[in-house]
Structure formats: C-alpha cells, structure tokens
Amino acid sequence: MPSIRELALRIRDRRLTAEDLVEQCLDTIFRRDDEVNAFITILADEARERARRADRELAHNQDLGILHGIPLSIKDLIDMEGQPTTAASKIRVGHRATSDAPVLARLKASGVVVVGKCNLHEFAFGTTGEDSAFGPTRNPRAPRHMAGGSSSGSAASVAAGMAMASVGTDTGGSIRIPAAACGVVGLKPTLGELSTDGVVPLAPTLDHVGPLGLTVDDVTVVYRIMAGDHVTVKKDPQDGRVANHRHATARLGVPTRYFLDLLDTDVSRAFVDMLARLREAGCHIEEVNIPHADTIATTYRHTQLYEAFQCHRQMLETRGNDYSPEVYQRLAAGRALSEEDYLQTQRDRLVLRSEVDAVLEEVVALVLPTLAFPAPPLGSKRLVLGGQSSDLRSLSLRLTQLFNLTGHPAITLPCGTTPSGLPCATQLVGRRDKTAALLALASRYESVIGMTR
Image (cartoon, rainbow, N blue to C red; front, side, top):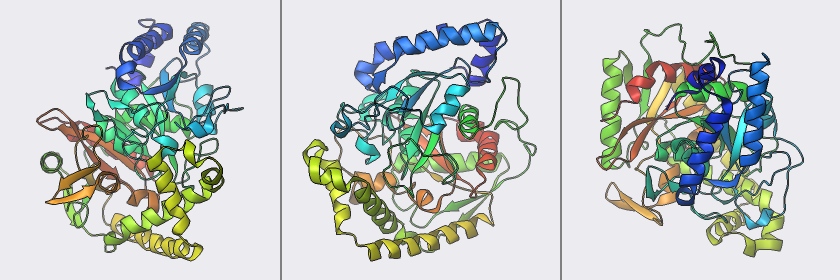
C-alpha cells in the first residue's frame, strides 16, 4: 500500500484523483466490513462529495496540505459535527455532535476526507474490542481473532485498507494494543500534547488522542497536523522520515524486570530477533530498571477506576442496564475507592514518572514489546503465560499502561509475525514533551524493526 506522502504526490501529479482513492476505500469497506465490523457510521455520500471538492480545489491550486483529499477514519469517541458520537454504547443513542473536536477540526481544515466513525470497546473501557453495542470488531488479518481495544475499529480500518490512517484514543494502551494486534503503527503522544476536548472522557488524567497508520511517516504527518502544524506535500525538513543524525548510534534501554517476565514464546522470539537487528544496525542496547515496576498495575487500576467512576457516576445510577455487563462491572468497581486511595495512588504515580524520567536521562528511548501475546481468539478471557493463567485484560495492559501514568510518548511498530501469521509489535518510549524526537528515532529504525521473520 502506498504511503500518504506517495498518494498525495500522485493526486497532485494527476495520476490519481481523491475521488478514486476514496472510492477504493469505500469499496473495501463495503466488501469487508460485514466481516471486520470496523465502522459504526459509514459516511459514504459525505466522503464522495468531500473528495470531489478536494479534486476541484487542487485543480484550482487551492492546496490545503499533504492530507488534502486523503481518506481517514476516526474513533466514534470523537465528536464530528452533525454526526452521532456513540462511544459504542446504548447510553448515547440519540446523541449528535454540535461541533468538531479540535483535533478533528484541524484535520478537516487540512482537507482530509472522513470515510466513517469507527467501532470501539464501549466507552473505551476494554482491551479486546468485543464489548460494543454494535458487535465486536474482528482482526482483518485473522477474523476469528480479536482486533484489540479499545480503538479496535481504528486499527482494523487501517490494516484492512479501509482508510489511509485513523485517529484513536489511548487511556492505558488503547491505540497501541489494537495497532499491535492488527500489525499497524500507533502513536500515543506526550500527555496533554493533543487536546482531548470533544472526546468522550474515560479517565481524564490518563486519556490521550493519537494517530494510527501503516508507516511511521503516515503517523507523523497526521500527528503534526493534529498538533497544529502545516505539512506540505514536498518533503518537509521536519517530517519524521528525515533525521539529521541518521547514522548516529542510538542508545536504547530494555526494561527487563516485570516487563519481560510474562511473554508469549513467539512474541519473545520476535522481540529478541528484533533486538539483534537493532544491534547490527549500530544501536547500543542495555538493560534498565524501573525500581517500582511492581506498583504499576495497582497504580494504574486505581487511577483509572476512580476517574472513570466519577465520569459515569450519574449514568450508572440511572441507566446501569444500558451498559454492557462487563463494562458496567468495571465502572462500578470505582465506587469502592476513596478520595484518599486516589491521592495515595497519585503519589505512587509521581514516583513512577520520576523513575522513567531518570532512566531516559541515560538512554534516548526505551524499547520493549507492546503486547505480551499475539491477538487471541475472540471470546478469550484468560491466557496462560509463564506457566500461570492470567486475566486477558490485565495482560493486555501490562506493557502499555505505565506510559499513560507517566505521560511519556510511546509508539508501536510491527516487528514480525508468529508462525501462524499473527503480528508481533515493538514499543519505543521517549522523553516527555519530545514526541517529535521519538518519531524521528522510530523513522530511522522502522525498516530494521519492521523486518518480518
């Protein structure tokens, strides 16, 4: 599949029209979405009209930037003027947004064509993509397997070729987990870097918005526009593919204790193989330690449950039966946490943030797997790793949730496949407020990380 940059050049060279490109995506949606179920709302008529308008604008030299005429999808947690924001829940039936979320408004101003709003785990409170009032999203690479969550439809739409990129949200890994499961690239920027206004909240101090795409450059382009930059079709000296120190040796840290304790055999093998390729490419890789890693799961759980309960308190009391049972149970569990519990959790959170900061003073980025296992079959509740049976949700969050607590930017890239063809993924984590530097690093080593076995 061509990159966004290549497609943008073809449109301007008149080797391709925006209308044809959008029609290709819509054709894929109509052929495959009954099986994949990536979309809640398909905006076919609106997308066709916007694509035709993009072609007319470009023909009259009204170029809005690299995304002009490019088809994207958005998670149905994000407001789009005139359209429902369902959050995949019966609770929000009848809702219709009166304005665009700021991140979407910036994308629209750059000329994107929104082909539809994507399915998700209800209220973004799950890692499988199965609990949705509109049915589960299926992995387009293996339809009997999960797409991951909560941005399940966003990842699936990109992996299936239904959109050139997508916008998702990430509270504990909800961009990175489905991106890893579906074999695409997903970015969680630094906490607070992109506005979450106009996005249905789950846990406000953990919530992030970010892009998914097929390549690091695709993700970089969408991220930069969401952040307010103007990106032209001509190669931009700031774009993620251009690194001033392309041949410099990167010093990367692998957090071993806790993070590598429970890994599927195939995921572990793919990660070890990928580290060997990075070393061959000149990277210096060393083991690092997060001293209080054993507090991550509890700190994350208490933060998320307390904040999510506060967001949903009234609806839980008045419309509890309209939630899917598992999402209701998790939301209601926050009732047991006191304000003092929450405040102590936030103190523990600051300790973890300072420890990650300290490690990143010694290395330019952390490198670790994104998901401890390949996408499991639909309906799975538990997995056996390291000789022990564990809850699937807890295992799904194990390698991603820390960086929502600490706010560090993190990007996931495919790093190989299992013998049965399921994707494996690697996560790079950078310094806070240095998302652009992380993207440049990921771009520099994308071809090394992304080699398949």
